[in-house]
Length: 165
Image (cartoon, rainbow, N blue to C red; front, side, top):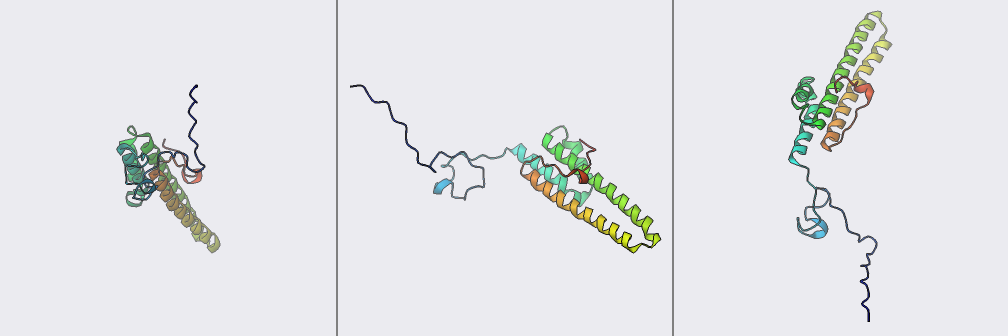
């Protein structure tokens, strides 16, 4: 009597094999209650990738401490070492220069309109200057968060004129 071919194992819905998970997506006890290391292999970022993320984050958050110098120094030091760091340092530098241009124009308009006695226009330009400042801070923080995730996040063009690449 000929042997029957082996039947494929029947997999119930919801019990399919799962792909490897990223670190931090499961609880500390491992996968499905198993001790750590006995579940699916976890994917860890390499040391250089983690280091690049740190430099990219500091390119944005360094604006709060060193203003234009932080992204400029990081750009000059790391531009040939990491495409990721270069992208974020250049974008942070472009954001800072764009913000400076907006602030100079806003202050000039305030100085020119102030003596004319138009309190409404003076107040309007003051609100616009403060609004641009708040948007700048929000997008700096958002870009730093995205850099931490390893993303090539693009800040809106009106807040980041492309000057340095």
